[in-house]
Structure formats: C-alpha cells, structure tokens
Image 1 (tube, rainbow, N blue to C red):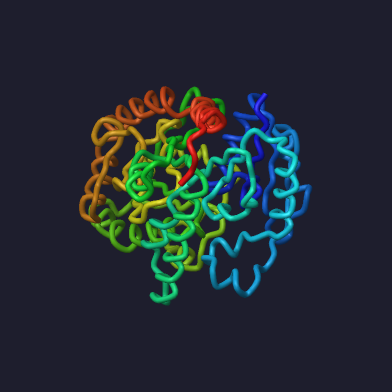
Image 2 (cartoon, one colour):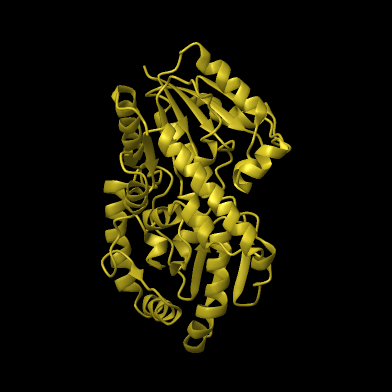
Length: 391
C-alpha cells in the first residue's frame, strides 16, 4: 500500500469552508486505499485533539503550531505563506523524510512549497485549490503597492514550486492551462470539486420550493464571496425587487465579514453558519452564485445541484465544471442579465426544476468524491513512477 505524507496548512475539520471540505472528503475517500500520514498546521486555540475526527482515515495525524518566520523570511515570503509558517512542521517533515519511509509527499497548497528540505527524495505532488497568483491579482487591497509586491512574491513561489516539483494537481482545466503556459513541462492533473451522494440528495417526498426565497451559500469571510454578495445585493437585487417585491435573499455561511453584516435588511437575511445547509438548498427557489473573482472550489454549485436546487451563476462561478447554460443552469455575465435570469427562474419553476434534474444527473455521473479521489490517486501513482526530473 502506498505510504503518503499528506501536508496541509490547516486542520481540515470541521469542513466549514470550501478548502476544508475538499481536503476532508479526499482524505476520507483515500484513507482505505493508501496509508495516509497527515501533518497539519494548527490554528490558534487548536491542539492535537482537533485532529481526532480525522484519525479514522489516517495512519497518523499530527498538528504543529504556527511560528513567526525570521525578519529575512518575512520580507521574502508573501503574507499568506507567512501566516501558515511553522518551524515545528518543517523540522518534523525533515525527520519524516530522512529515512525514506514515504512513497510520496502531497502538499495541499502552493504556500507549502518551501516546507520540504532540499534533499527530500520522495516524489512530490502540489495541490492547488486555486491559483493563488490569479486570485491575489484580482482581490482588492487598500495598499496597491503592497498588493503588487505580495503578488510578485507569490509568482516567485509558484516558479520555485514548478522548478522543484514536476507534478501538480488543480481544480479545473482552466487552471491547468494557465500553469502549463507559465511553466511548460509540468505534469498536471485535474481533480474537480465534488459531493457526497449519501449526504446530498433530495428528500422523499421533497418539500415544496419557495416561490420567493433565493439563496447564497459560502464562507462569508472569504474575500471573493464577500465581493460577490455585496455586488449582488447592491447591483442585482434591486432590479429583482422592482418586479418581485416579495423576494427574500438568505445568506448562509460561517464568519460573516463586517461588509456582509452591513447588508442585513428585510429583504436580505444573514443566516450565518447553519448546522445543516440541506434544508435551505431544498426549499430555495434558486441558488445564486454571482462570483466575479476566480478561485475557490465551486463546491456549493455541485452540492446544490445534488439537491435538485436550480442555479443561476456567473461563468466564473461555474468555471471548471461541465454544467452548461440553459441545459443545467442559467449563466449571466452582468448585473442586468443576472437579475433577468433570476426572475426567469422565479417565473417558471417547472423549467428550472427540469434543468436542476439534468444537472443532478450530470453531478452523479461526474462528481462524487469517490470518483474524484480516484483521479487524485492516479496522479499520485503516476508521480511515484515518473522519473523525469523537475525543472
């Protein structure tokens, strides 16, 4: 059985954000197929007990506290890389790899590219939940020079990872194309985002969908989600309300940022973190995904269609997945088009339901976590047999 040293910048539990959900479900699906040894960076307030829910899927699981890098490293490293820095983790990885006991190292984010010793002999796969360079170029920052300097450092990190490690896994063919153009010679695997069919499925009998409630779901401290919902509430929802004064938007997700809380109104309900998102997905007339900034894992789209929930999205919000406009969901690029698409769904729930049923069938065929985990295992297996040098 393959022995995999799986390195994560966070403890992927509880699965309350897209990245944690993705990592947890891949770990869960692969735990019986390979021997997993998890090494994760702890958040403040966490300890080894935070890893207990993951131990059933891992041969070993250890957490390591964050540490401030040296002044030189603080200047050299991007902010996100500094935030997850851990001297204890780096020391443990050097010890883990010294004896050659692992067949493969999986780095679960680009920001971990420097944690391994230079003489590590095991093959390495770098997993990009998103392309950090692309995301951070698009995110608004109050200090433009600081932002550009940070993006420059992320590009240097990406380049160093491409030179050191040949094998990379991304979430979409679009991300793969970007990396292939920037760094010719990489071996790139695509593992999309998925869902658990045993958890996300319609009730029988299914409850009636609301005629007037629409839904947004996501981690509400994540900058692209904050941008998306603020744009929707201010730029799209007023046009919807002019024709349908009874429409109510539910915003569901952990840790609402101050800018999100400011959107609360009789028409906009901030629900925060909920114990179970499925009742919202079953009762909403539609899920809206007004993302304008790329990045992330598109998990909510797949989970929504698994619950037969109609979806209206920007092309960015559905990027990397096989769902097609008018057949599985509605896509709209601008505020006017998004408002019109939402009104169309509200006006014709039967047509929306037929699209949702086709989308669910596609999700069942393509995106169960078990199937996606097999794709990741294929990438791991190839990395252990490929003898082409990196760089």
